[in-house]
Image (cartoon, rainbow, N blue to C red):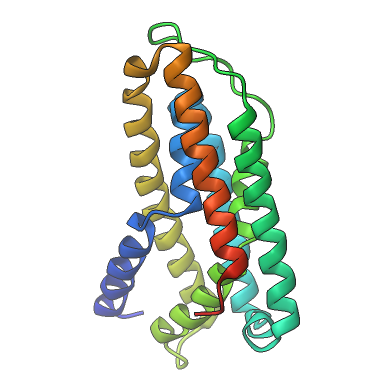
Amino acid sequence: MALTTWLAFLFAATLIAVSPGPGAATSMSVGLRHGYWAALRAILGLQSALVIQLSIVAAGLGALLAASTTAFNIMKLLGAAYLIWLGIQKWREAPQAVEGENITMPPSGLFVQGLLVNLTNPKAIVFIAALTPQFIDPGRPQWLQFLILAATMCGVDTVVMSGYALLATHLRRWLNDARAMKAQNRFFGGIFVGAGMLLATSGRN
């Protein structure tokens, strides 16, 4: 892979990562609630989903979602339902203020939560299927190129999601009361529900 091609992909991956979406909402929500090191678990889940999606595209299975309306709609509805469920759970979550800089122990399942947020989004696979082939040189080993693209995309996304989580973590000191915690639970709950509804009513593009 030529350096110019990689730099072009790096730029595209950065633009994708900084665009607000369910991944950013997850990173900020967990960071605000539990601190950065807990959010890192969810972020690693997000990256694992990206690796799986890139592997699906590399294996040629991404074309199925791109071509099959039924398969796409099934995945879309599953992803939308999961985001809405996350939003309802967040909305109903009891407020728990953070004492000073003491980070509470995170609940189990943050990795799986991050994994499912990205994995159940069929538009991500379709987008990756449309984007990555433009940076693949058919005259060179393709799996090595996909590994480079996967490492680049996950590296960039980890940095950006960490930035979102750290920003939220620094806001915790201003939200150390029950009313503020309830407000942020409902704010992120609303974001997840809105993202789920948007996904459910969206098309392929």
